[in-house]
Structure formats: C-alpha cells, structure tokens
Image (cartoon, rainbow, N blue to C red; front, side, top):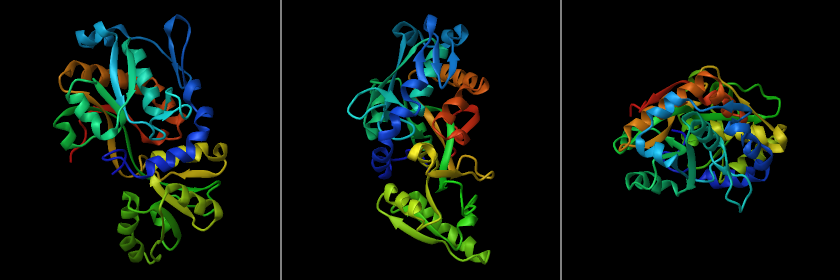
Length: 315
C-alpha cells in the first residue's frame, strides 16, 4: 500500500513543501568522509568489512562501485540537498552510502524516472535501485529485493497531540484530512464500518487536492489529524517549522504504519552474489544500530526492520 507501487501524486507537493528545510536536516551533515576513508553516516562511523567485500561479484569489485538508480525527489527517501543542484540526500541515499562503506565500494546514485527504473536495471544500465520501491511478486519476476523497511499509512497530528490521537479508532467521529484519490482515503473509508460498530460515529473525512492543503487544515484546527504515508508524516513532523508544528502519532500495534508493505533495494537478477552481499551488509548495519540511526535522522525510526529479508512480499 505504501512506498512506490506507483509514484503517488502527493510526492511533488510534499517535495515542494519540505524542500526549503532539507539543507538543514540530515543531508550533507549526515554523510561525510572521515580520516583514513572511514565514512560517517547519521553520526555513525562505518568501516569496510573485508569478508563482505569478498562476497561481491568480481565485476563489482573490479569496478569499485555499484550503479544505483533513484527517482528524486520523494521525501524523505530521496531529495536534493538544494533545489537546482545535483547533490543528493535522503534515507535511501544515506543507507546506500553506509552499505557502500561496509562493502568497500561506492554506491553511485543516478536520478532516473521511477517508471523507467526496473527496465533500466533489466537493460544493464544499473545494478540496483534504491527508491522506496515496494517489494511485490510482480516485480520479483524481473528483479530481486533486499528488504530494508516496512511502511504504510500514518497519522499526523498537531504539535503536542492535543486531541490524544494514537490509533485509527481515535479518528472515529472526528474531522480528518486526507489527500483525494489516495490509498489513505481508501483506508479511512474502509474504517467507517468499524467506527459504526463501535458506536463512535463515522470519521468525518475532509478531502484536499494536495497534502500541503491538508496540513494547512490541521494547522488551523479545522481537523484533528491528517492521514498520509507514514514516512511522509514522519518527515513533515520532523521538518515543518523545525519540528514544532506537527507530531507523528505512533500506534504500537502498527509500528510501520497501517497496511504496511516491505520496501526493498531492487537488484539485477544477473548478479545474485550482489544480492547476497547487500543483504548481509544490511543485516550488519541493522545489528550495529547504523540503520536505525539513519531512519531516525529522517523521523521514521519505526519503519525499520530487525531482519534484512530477501523477496519478502507474498502478494
């Protein structure tokens, strides 16, 4: 349901809403080169693991890099540090730099339109893609996935959560903002029956053409919450007014969000050794806390997973 089964219409609006604050959050400060070539990502030093490097295909070891396709912008996964300049930042970019450091090769990111990413991998133009891609059975036919997060829909509330919203049930009988023609609108509609059964009254769904419009309604108190993708909600909560405008509601029963699905690094099927090496490197970053630090930098720590799985999607 989340990430990029197809590129949501909200992406451009969200990018425009948060781009002005990108340079002050994460970005250049999150990824840097320390002495002796050690890489620092999200404040964590990442060093090469020779054993993992040896697992890489000979082609990648000789090239010294992994060619990565990514579709920019899609906050908080991929963004430009500054509008009009090519330098990248974002969760996927930072994670790629950490994986490269652990494997002892460079993860070289190149912007690519989303609908052309998988065909470009099939054509041999890229080795992998890191672009908040939803792992699903259809895509598994042509690429392999190393899954690194799981995310769905989240709830954005006003700073301090004055309406005490934690779960979807807390939205029953209240005014809630959502962008029109989205999975999140469908989620709210399907929740109406449960609200009625509980005797709490149906959700008063307020639709808006853009996420930014929905956030204005939340700011002004016209609604008690906005439902949008959880990564986007976390990023807006972290960046809007330097983190002083909104909060992200956290439902313990849905840490990755509602109707969460796995997001994966897509890898060419021509290099199965690369898939295995990335999977093991990612697990190392999960185990030592680097992955969690990266997710936390972008306000979405809860979408992290404990195990780096391969082709985890079952539908």
